[in-house]
Length: 191
Length: 180
Length: 233
Image (tube, rainbow over all chains, first blue to last red; front, top):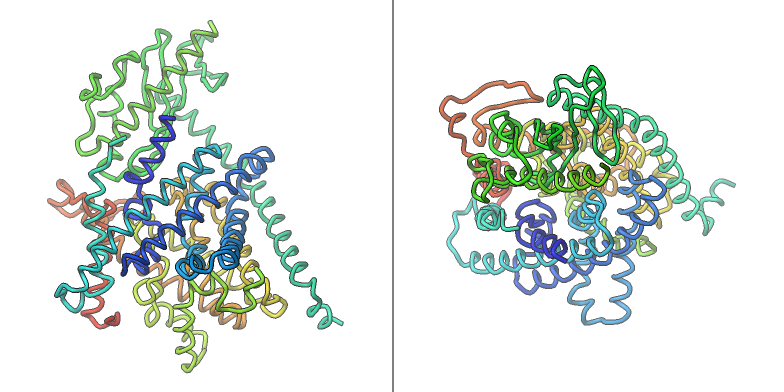
């Protein structure tokens, strides 16, 4: 139990996917302009992360490890993730059109989002069990949502600020991320 | 004839299967070439680090993930084990040697990816030499009541090494006790 | 994967769409070997102009050695996958196009990872998870979809080398700033090239830490805009 809690907190605050490991940056800068978009993106990423982690850790623990095929994981995981995202998209489209309109456009972006691939690979390199993998994925998803929401809140205000012309848009977003990352360094050594 | 085949409904599936099959065959071949190299280098790393800790080493035996180290005249001069912890920049692999009284004979960092000039200083002898002669109860940072000075500005890396050694050492001592 | 028949429904293609638009506007110019080569390096630099493949740009630029290793890896995968995808482009059914690209790219990445682990273990260790993550690097899949699947082998190879070098230059610039400021020294593959007096005794560790990465790339982009290389929003 203690171990699961450590994995979770570590993923949310200390090894935060975006600020400490630089994963999922494209979507982080692309979708953090509006608070509502950022929230939907966060939920979508968490959802895909959970489903992908469950399926890939099952494959890893019950197929790849017994047959000593660990080195095949990159090829297998990327195919699993790509098909999963497609399936999730179709299911949401058929069952809940309102949710699809809110989240649908973010789903395709997630396959090439390195977070999903990174977490599934981390689960295998750390030899996490299925349960640990799920907790790890949940932590990563919550951490991602947390940071992208903070970021979008700041960027909404930043739009009204009088930034130098050369800094407007992405450069100042990077500087904001730098300050955020600096704040998160404070969580180091907590666990 | 060829064109007709290309427009067949099953063709996309067949094509994808062929591509996957080629990929799998290729990976199996490459892995068969590289994995012995990786294995051999790992053994070399362990041997090299064991020699650093036990200059009198003649041979060693691996049993229950513990290395039993023998000297020139065939007597047992100590034990060694590997420990790994998560530092600031990734996994730190450590080799720890124990003498026959279960005190630390020496510590050697096998591999690490800590920040150069900061956390990477865990490899320096000024840090690793502190472990010499300690028993398990002393292995903690001074702030935690132990005898190890953390590296300035690199508490996380220092702590990762210390707790990895302590955790693994207590397991190893249990195994050694029970096998007696 | 059936949706891939329609390009706009295809996840990966869409994520890398940005790049495709660039290529369309680019088509007017001549398509010679050198043109393709130069394009990726300067005018359509994947990192600074298209803002693609950011994760490795920030994550492994703490040392120049890592940046060089990563660049070599990306160039290998780009070149390999572009050549293979371009040579099978006429027999690849468009329905399973994207899965085929993914398998080809993932195969090259795995081969790269296995070879580096065996022969350059130190690099394998320090690139860590970012090495297998080349597989989801938008630059690689983007080039496969936007260029290699439509152009002959030689041009695709030129395109891969150009884009790869463009990526490498971006990594090199950022890593040079970070390593020199952050350690006061410059070390390439274990050999020390020079030391900045004063700075090496009291290095600005901030620059090699994660927040420093964000700062350096933000300021670099602003400078590129002032210099007129990068466009304003």
